[in-house]
Image (cartoon, rainbow, N blue to C red; front, side, top):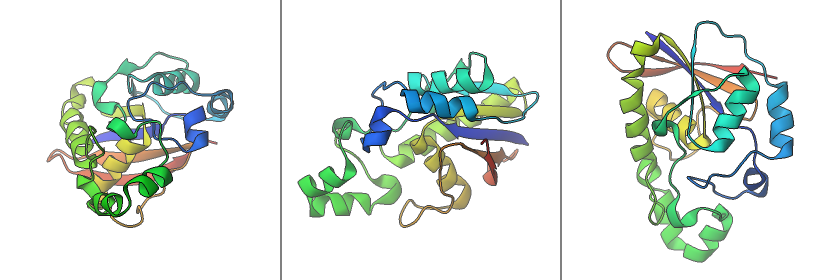
Length: 191
């Protein structure tokens, strides 16, 4: 069995403003950096991974004092034309169309973006390859990737309330079985 821990990157100015970031390479802000310096997780014999975006790599370097392996599969969901906008503004702009799109759950698709199901597929495909790097992995990544993992582990279709709340300063532990079934293990406070 392979153990995978997902950590969401520290805050950016866009996070604090409620803007969708996606592939936009926004750095962590001063507040995010100060918060990440307080995060601590006691792990041994792990491989450290990060999304290629600077908000994730910087967070990984702050928490673990080492450079992570960069993995493209851990990049945030591509929000396409919606990046840099607030969900509330998109709901006003698109009205009923936005409601219908959001109600598609895993198949919701931003204009010129990707669906959460596509995120799930790329993450699961990558998870199936990491055992050669050891049995314990830590991934500093994004909310969309962690949501995709939670959906895989709990059969949540991304409709309605998320079964495991994602909060800053927490790590989310999962196990991947030999039959490639992802299960949720626990939430670990790093504060």
